[in-house]
Image (cartoon, rainbow, N blue to C red):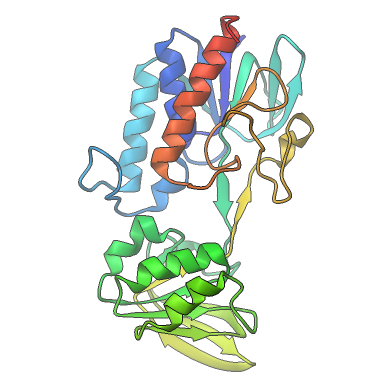
Length: 302
């Protein structure tokens, strides 16, 4: 039996692993896809303290190496259920493996909602991005499009509008749904063009994205761009554990004191919980706080 199982190997989970391992606890990280999480898709990152510039893949490798060096173990497999046996928990993977621990941290993250186009995967990180804070600076004085019209999308759009030469906002509804004041700010900018009743039907390019195919009011068009930002929401990865958690209407964990769930011994960290800011630094902060809370629980101090 482990002291702590961490479900999810992104910045929140790996930070938690480092903190718990340094507290002399046996730690297992279970990751279903790629250690490092979504950050591995970013070709270059400039907003992490201590690094002027680093690729997402390199940063992920450093996090993994640090966790392993501190003594944490990492296994790959999708956790499909979590059992609460009071004094211990059991994580069950899709291959039937069962792992026991005194406490669990859920750091499952939230996946960006994709456009669902068949050619989309090859352009993610090669022209398609989901984060203006992370990648907007790479498109300074260039032409980009942003898909989405809600509050989150308009926040991204305002940031991009201050950087790029031209910004197309592509909304599938007849109107933007974000806050009126945000809309006013964008409509006042000469470099912003808002296109409503738009459906994105395809992406153009060989190895890198060079344009977007759309239909507007049923009429097919092509827009040539250097980059595409997709801001149509995120999908938290909590459904398998919903019986042990309080979830909001969108499926995010409602946490007390940031990291505490309704089930004793189960903690939460990172983008899978309700929070205002979802960045690598805030995920790491969650991981540290969750690990400290879990260690206190294991040692009978909470």
